[in-house]
Image 1 (cartoon, rainbow, N blue to C red):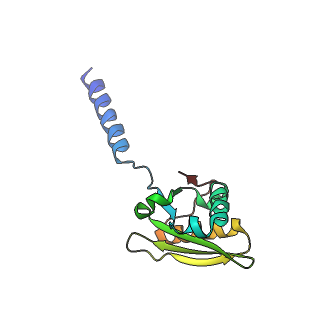
Image 2: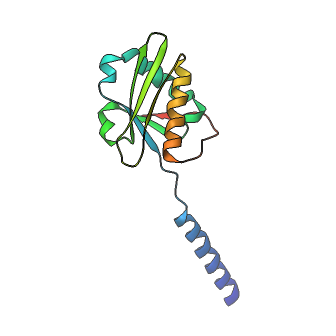
Image 3: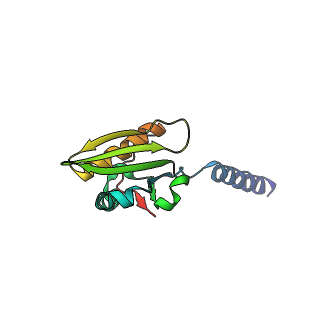
Length: 133
């Protein structure tokens, strides 16, 4: 009887310790720089609509521009001729951000997300979709 109770206690302690140590992965946040909604509204809406469908954006969260100062990254996006141009700024230290351009918005969204994963030194996700707040 004592052995059974001891084994149950040790099993519960082991499970509790494992659950306490497992952390949910950190959500990396991205927001449009506030000027984007004024100057590049159509591009911002297009980006926002494409973001949940892009497989490489899983684990990233696009938050409202009003919360941009709390985001990990701020994004400026616009059009230059046929290209969608993006600049990724960093709001928290130790990272580099990036910039680029693509003819298709889906490719620009993918590049932004891949740049963030590279910057965070995290592996790319394998399931579709980022979330939009």
